[in-house]
Image (cartoon, rainbow, N blue to C red; front, side, top):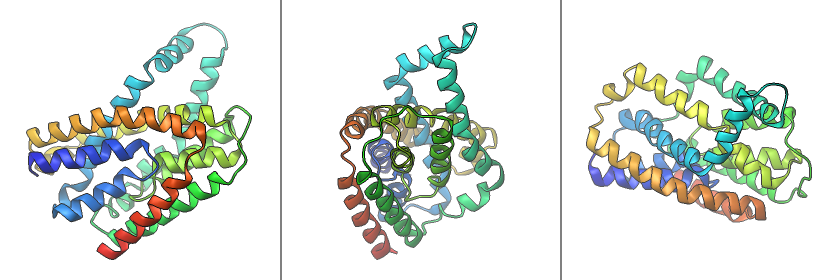
Length: 259
């Protein structure tokens, strides 16, 4: 993988990780257009996902710091309750990682027909959420589990993590101004965990990824991720998701054509 290819894929990851258009689906399309070998797919995807997790930490650092202080304080408080709901949301993707990892990896083999179908699934999620009346209540434990299930499904390339999670929360009736923050915070631990497991298992070395291009892709994803994260928070509050639904239809059709 060259520096230029890594930069292109890193920018794709950074821009599409937080916008509801599936970063992994776009990376599959990008790799197909660039002619990259499928063996290098998943480790690079995990690496640039790590860069966008760092972008989440930068954008939501005040919230993370407040949650940490609340967790260390004595007695029950709002921060501990919020943290408990974040932990609940991570259970479904933990189960997928423990029991379905091999099956998930099978989709990262350049199968653009499957990616195209998953893009259309994302489009349907976003369209359904768009026509749902705005919710007025706080996120509860049931919402957290539902959003966690959506995050687990979104490990498939073409299904947007942010799109599926936020759509699930909107359909459940949770407040829009809380959804983006919760959706992004709940991604931090699972994606960092995936990076640690991949590194510990030697996955990055096994894929023969050169340090220079990998660093370039990581940095590109980090910088563009910060910009896209801030933009997505504003868009969710305004309920502007239908345009992304239409975009996912176009991306799905493109994937099916390329397949």
